[in-house]
Image 1 (cartoon, rainbow, N blue to C red):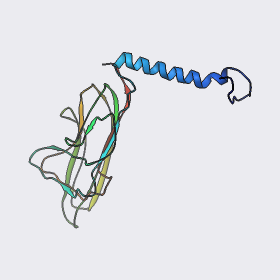
Image 2 (image 1 turned 45 degrees about the horizontal axis):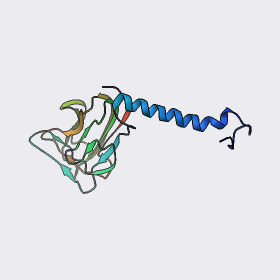
Image 3 (image 1 turned 45 degrees about the vertical axis):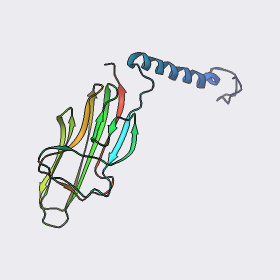
Image 4 (image 1 turned 120 degrees about the vertical axis):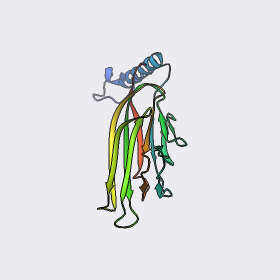
Amino acid sequence: MWDCDCAFRTQGCCCGNTELQFLRDQFFLILLWLAFGTGPVNVAFTAFLGEDVKCIGPFERNVSIPYNVIPLNEGHGYNSVLGLFTAPVSGVYSFSLSVYCRMQRAGQHMYYKVQLMRNGSPEVAMWEDNAQDMEDSSSHRVLLSLQRGDQVYAELVQNRTLCGNIEGLNSFSGYLVYPVAA
């Protein structure tokens, strides 16, 4: 393997760099397998409400938001039927939540509250309660330390309505930043 294109066009350690990097990566994967009992850990998802969803709510109780377009679900942690993410491995995760609401006509009361939930408890929330404007948006990003099996989801609070969806503006996404031993 000395027939490589090195910076100095000589036989030396730079020619073995690619092989050394490959061995380093393989060693890291073995360590992951030993620590977590799994191979490479790839977890990422993004989900949003499609254009066909015009309004959600109001409901008599808090409900998870059923994001119906899922362009990415690496690791299969997001369940679109239940609208929730279940951590496949313990680790630190990054979550993003974006909310958009548009009223049908001027003077309507915009009244929504969406919260990011972890195992049934709120982590962050976004809300709007006014009749001064016809549309509004909010977003939030949070890092959470999760144990395998923990669940995270976006929830519409009871008696609130989320309307006027434009595809992609109501979204929920997350990814594993790094795994940790349980």
